Image 1 (cartoon, rainbow, N blue to C red):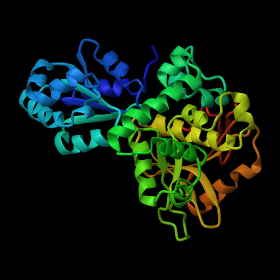
Image 2: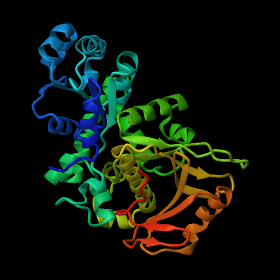
Image 3: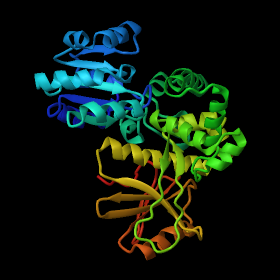
Image 4: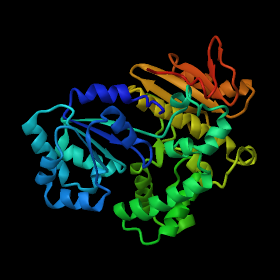
Length: 384
């Protein structure tokens, strides 16, 4: 069993809140984590039609049946249950009584905000990080193989071929989750939208360009991307523009949470394919950004991530803000270090003199230089 980094924090907050909620993409390991944390809890999955019908038609009876230690999976399928949970947990005053999970963040957060604010501890569980795999038999030996393989637990543990795993993942996602959340009549067009996004990974989110290719308006493009965000497939990296007098780019960049899915969408099936692909550098950048994002969530840090670019094309790939501390990170897939890689970092430090500078590159050597920390993907900067 591969230990998940957030486990101790989940266990800690189960002692302090009546409900712990775990969100994340489908197949990220939410159920497994819940059962490891509380193996003796009753378990009910609201994907099951009979259990879902019970919860919908008789919510109080459902919560009388399932109490004093329960895992409720995919609770977003019965939104009305949240209000009843508020009532019964307020009456019982039992900490750690319920662990609830959901793979649709928007539906979960909407109901939690309305009904369970102050009563629930929130966690996000993403697919495995390199840090979590490090001391296991599935440890990562090179970034290219990890990028192509992806990090979903079942795929890694069962060694499922990428085409088999991600083909079924996308098909299931589109046919189930997309129909649930949005009334999208043309599902083939939505799948094309996802593929076009993959080709733009690490680039600015240009709704007009996507809209022109798909013959859709900006409102629809934004709505569809929000759907990917709430399903934990893709995310936006916002620009950093704190206290700058210069004209700064204010459009976000787009990334995928899992590079295996990204590579599948780009037609990359092997490390040989990746080596020759035009997007290799952007895929490495996506990998570093997503791993940093995972590590921040897994370790419950206060770090906020951004990128920075001005109108003169001066740029830093990743900015990490942890309280008053600021770190600037340049990301390069090359295995050798070029002095030109530090140009953007030096310029940013000229503007923000107290910034800590990092280079993450595709090689394996780690260095502590006078002005820079140089790291491989296996030794990422730590902002705990």
